[in-house]
Amino acid sequence: MNNNEIEEYLQKGEYAGIVEGNYDFYCPLKLEEINNFVQNVGIYTNIAIIRGTDEDEDVLFNTYGTYINRIWPELSLSDRDAFQSTINMMAGRLVEEFDKDKQTEVLSKVEKFLTEALDVDMKEHMDRKEIYNAMSEMEMQVIL
Image (cartoon, rainbow, N blue to C red):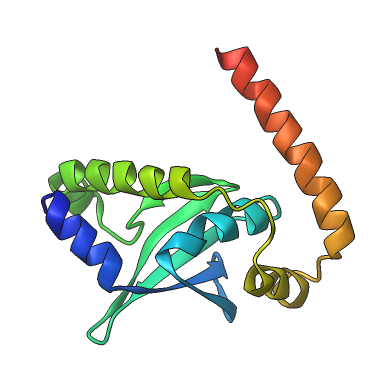
């Protein structure tokens, strides 16, 4: 895949966020809403983003907390090696998309998912998110 094909692949899909391995609850998402889901739900559990079209669906990526763990986690090791360049381009494109997202408020559909799927109290969530973000900033300062 080249950059244009990756862009077409991302734009044509419909997305859903789930708790990894749990298909009982899902949150329908647009491409530009994925980061909001990752940053808000990922502080509680690992998640997966499903991409679907009329023809098929696949797991676009899963997370380890709020960080992308693996793009196309269902690929076999041999396929992963064969598609390493494409996976790296996809990772770069997703980072670009996430960097564009300046949404600080929890989207209403993400809030609904948090309360229904994870039984999260939204006041506690905002407190937890504040602490999580402060810890992440401190970690970045240590790295730099």
